[in-house]
Amino acid sequence: MWYERFGWRENVLTTRPSPNLIGLERERQELKESVESGRILLIRGEIGTGKTSLLLWLRNTLKKEIKTKPVILEGIETRTKEILLSSLRRQRTLLDKLMLRSYPKNLVVFLDEAEKFPEEITEHLRLMWDRKDLYSIVIATTDLALDNFTPAFKDRIGKTMVLSSIARGDLVEIIRKRAGDNNPFTSEAMIILAERYNSPRQLLEGCVEVCIYCAEEGLDEVTEAVVEGYLTRQTRQVETRQTRQERQVETRQKEGEMVDGGAIQGLQNGDTAEEDMTKERQKRQPETIQTIQTRQPKRQERQPETRQKEEDVRGDEPTTGLQIGDTAEEDMTEKRQTRQLVQDVRLSPEQQKIADLVGHGVNTVKGIAKELDMGEAATRTQIKRMIEKGCVAVVSSERPKKYGLKE
Image (tube, rainbow, N blue to C red; front, side, top):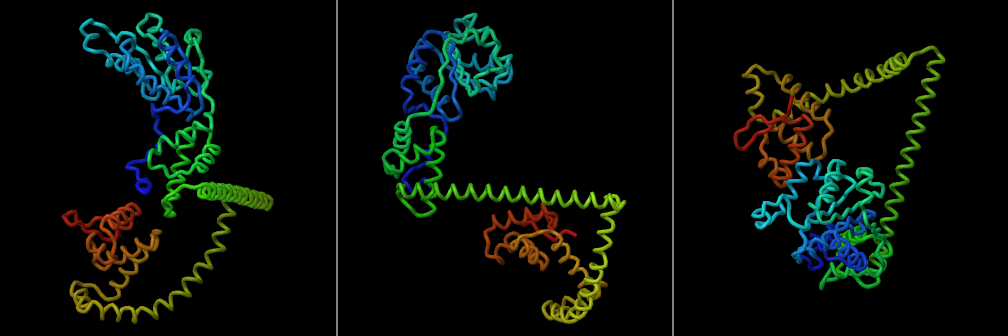
C-alpha cells in the first residue's frame, strides 16, 4: 500500500473523526463547562470543521469523571423511540440496575448529525431533560434552522457555538501530529496544503492524495515543488473535465436543434415522425443488401480454403462429423453462427480470446488461464462478465466447471 512507502503501518491521515483535537481550546472549555452545568448546548459548523471530533473528545473527557455518563447518538441510526430508549438503557451500570433506575444517573446525550433525527425523538429527549432523566444535551448539526426540533426544545437551548475555519497553524499541526516521527512533509509543503484546504477533513483528504501521487512517482519526500506540481495537475484535470462537459452539452444542444429542425421540416411536408423514420430505413435498406451481396461471393470463395485448413488441423474430426450425420458445410455453418454470436456481443480483447478458446474446447478456468498466461482469478472474473453479457454459459457444474458458448 502507498502508506508503507512512508514507514506507516496504516493510513495515519484518515478522515475518520478523532478525539485527538488540535486547536479549539476555547470551544473545548466552553463545551465542558456547559455540560457540567446541565445545560443544552448547540454546536453548528460546516462538514469537516470538527464537530464529531469535539464530541468524541468530550465523551472521553467525561468518562474519566464519575459525575456524568456520556453517550453519542447518531441521527441516521436512531430512527424510532424504541431504538432511542434501548440505546440509553444499555448505558446503565450494575449499580443503576440494582437501584432499579430506568436510565443511568447524570446521563449526557450527544446528538451527532442532529438534523437527521425524527421530531418524535427530539421531542422525547426534551421531555426527558425536563423530567431530569437527562443531565445535559449537546446538539451537533450543520443546519441552524433545526426544523425537526419543536419551538419548545429550541427555547431551552442555552448556548450556541459556531465552529469556523481552523487557523493555518493548527492545520499544519494536524499534519505534523498525524504523520508522527515518519513525517514526509516539509514545512513549506505543509504550509501550502494548509492554505489550500480550510477544514481538517479537506486537509487530510488532500494530504492522502498527495502521498499517493508521491508513491506512484517513486518519491519519498513531499516537498513544496511536489505539492505545487500535484495541485497544478489537479487544476488542469478539473479544467479538462469541465471543458469536456461543456462540449458535450453543446453537442447535445446542436443535436436537439437538428432533430427539432428535421421534425419541423417533416411536419411542413405533411409527414409524421413515424413516416419519416420509415423512409430513413428504406433508404438504408438497399445499401445493406448491396453490402451483403458484395461480401457473399468473397465468403464463398474463402469457404473451400477454410474448410481444407480446418480439416488438416482437426485430422479425423471431419470423418467423425460425417459419421453422426453432419456434413462439412453444416459444421462450418455452426462455427460461423458461433462467431456471429460472439461478434454480436461487445467483448474486450481478453474476452474475445477466451471465447475463441472455449469454442475450440478449452473450457475450464485452469486451461484458459494456462493458454493465455493469466491468473486464474482474473480468468474467472472475465468469464463471469461474459456470462453476464449472455455469450458464455456453464455447461457442467462438476469440478472443474466447464463453460461453453451460449447459443
